[in-house]
Image (cartoon, rainbow, N blue to C red; front, side, top):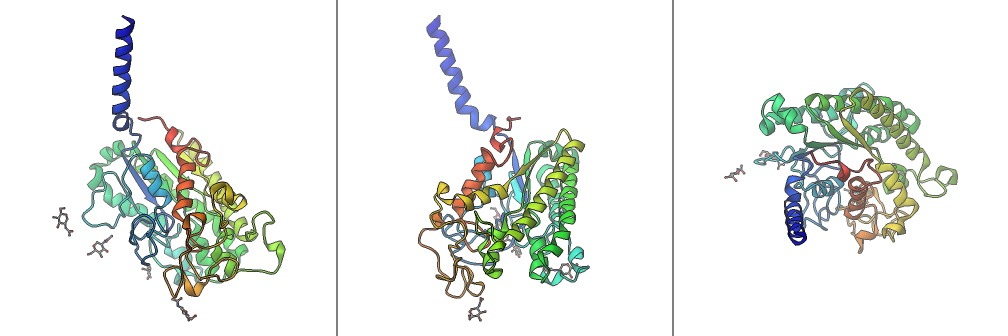
Length: 363
Ligand SMILES: *[C@@H]1O[C@H](CO)[C@@H](O)[C@H](O)[C@H]1NC(C)=O
Ligand SMILES: *[C@@H]1O[C@H](CO)[C@@H](O)[C@H](O)[C@H]1NC(C)=O
Ligand SMILES: *[C@@H]1O[C@H](CO)[C@@H](O)[C@H](O)[C@H]1NC(C)=O
Ligand SMILES: *[C@@H]1O[C@H](CO)[C@@H](O)[C@H](O)[C@H]1NC(C)=O
């Protein structure tokens, strides 16, 4: 009797574990909205060495390899996301609406402020959601069927904001003046999330913006002899990080309000900022022997940060470092595959998404 029970238990466990991956898949699809941090091919600008580590060719991704969204897709058992503009592709397991250089805010916001010449694409958050809405019937049919479908989908909304602030900063506005964009940006992100909820989304991840004051691009262009400009522990430019911090605080407030309004919807903040900050404060903990402030692919040996606007990665005699995985920064603005893998782990298993993505019970 005992033996039989033991046998049955083993059989049960065997069945359970062998069928586990399929039956317990948490999500049927993954949809992403964003900018160059997550574009997987809607805009293809550069060539190799972009893509060299993983794909062997340039895919449009702004990195040497996979992005955070690729590792999220892998982590939840879904394929890498096809770009929404892909031809002849099935979007049944998801699609990616992110565009390199996409701002959150629409063209008119910048136009009214004399800054629209700094915009490179018309792919604001609402335009990305327009594309999503247009694509939905081909994926899931009627609005009601799509609600059923999206009940089992994960949506990642962002990071958004980086390009809104860049458009002001590169248009010659001061950080203080650009800070006035923050409530507009976080409001439009909240509006976008409400639209997605209206379409049926019930599980959303909303990443923060990054501490761009730690990026070689800003560190080089705004280099200063005044040590008070720099964080003592990080060597990052404080005023840029303060802008990012202020955005993230406003974003968290918006998300808090949305959670009260939609208690049945899961809206999780992904703390991109805190993870990047930790890379900078304690790079060796992650194997980043080159530190976090030096570009891998860039001007050979230029300055402290190995960054030169006239020899950006893949241009004008730029070179790739010999050990990419010891660097956080790939090209001075975007990160290496290694950094992306670590960030994704913090979202999948914690602590930078709470509760972590993989803790979500299977439905
Ligand atoms: C899809 O086809 C169109 C027209 O041929 C082309 O312009 C576009 O670049 C293609 N999309 C992708 C992602 O390759
Ligand atoms: C689209 O895919 C089908 C089936 O795989 C193929 O026969 C067709 O040639 C493809 N069309 C284009 C434009 O790539
Ligand atoms: C974006 O749209 C505006 C207004 O509709 C237009 O003037 C502008 O040229 C477009 N920009 C790009 C990059 O397509
Ligand atoms: C390449 O370098 C030259 C000389 O420094 C510079 O004038 C030019 O703008 C650079 N080109 C690019 C694409 O950065």
